[in-house]
Every structure is written in structure tokens, then in C-alpha cells.
Image (cartoon, rainbow, N blue to C red; front, side):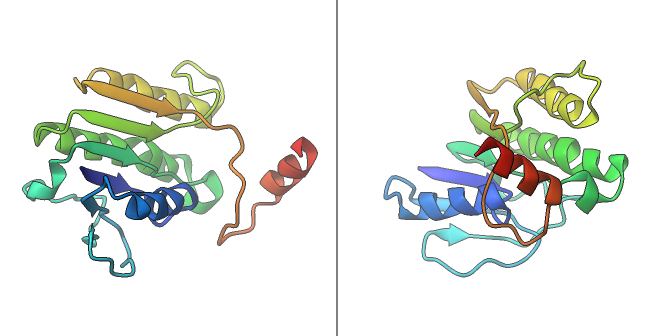
Amino acid sequence: MKLLLVGATGLVGSHVLRVALMDRRVDRLIAPVRRALPEHPRLFAPVVDFDSLPEDPAWWQADAVICALGTTMRTAGSKQAFRRVDHGYPLAVAKLARQHGTRTFVLNSAIGANPTSHIFYNRVKGEVEQELTGMGFRSLTFARPGLIGGKRDEFRPAERIAAEALR
């Protein structure tokens, strides 16, 4: 199986990357990234600019795409920047993969995703889901995790408090 993974350097994506590379059913893993990944015999990780993704590479054609792209308002710095990463980038990836014949797409979304939500984060996630639904994928999966725990490179005090409260 040829798998395309976007978001491979983040918390969720790095876990998916590790599991996929251990799975012998994955013959080839394509992981377009903003910064280089360690080499692996079955991994091709082209460094790309997500604001202007290359349209022609054959690596867009895969058996499946897993999209774990995402950021936070704090990291993004503005609603516009957040929307670009959590809405624009996944849709651009989906469009290119679909144009190249990929028929399966998995999105790491969020619990509460709803295009009519009054909460900006949930609304953006819901809008992405809604737009992906109309792209013609044979198989489309939305993973909607709640709070995602794990060791992060950045400090998120609100998430830490919530995680402790929910534990």
C-alpha cells in the first residue's frame, strides 16, 4: 500500500508516521513536510511549501491519505492563519490527491466539528469536513478526538489543566 501522510511532524502525525513505518502493509510512505524527517527506506519526505504545493508530482497518487495537519490559535497567531492551516491546507492536499486518483481520505478533525458552530475552532473543522464530503472520495473518514494528550514541543496551559481535570 502507498500511503500519503500530511502533518507527519506534529503530535498525531508523528504517531501515525511511526506506526505506518512499522506496518509491513505500507510499502511506501509519502510525507510532504515543511522540515526534513529522518531517513527511512520506505519513506519519501519531500520538503514543500504548503502555501504553494507542487501539483505535478506522481506521489500525490496514493492508496490513501491521512491528514493530521493542524495548529492552534496561539501558534497560528490569528484566525486567518489558523484557518489557512486547518482549512486551506487539508483541502489543497485533498484536491491534489483526488485529482491524481486517490480514493481514500482520513482527516484528524475534532469533537464538536460543525460548520454552523459559534465556536470558531469547531466551525473551521466542520467546514473542512463538509467540503471534503463533496470531493468524491470513495472512502472518507473523520476522526474526531476530544482532548489529545501527549508530549508536545510547546506549552499549552489550558490543555494541561483540562487533561488533569479529565484524568
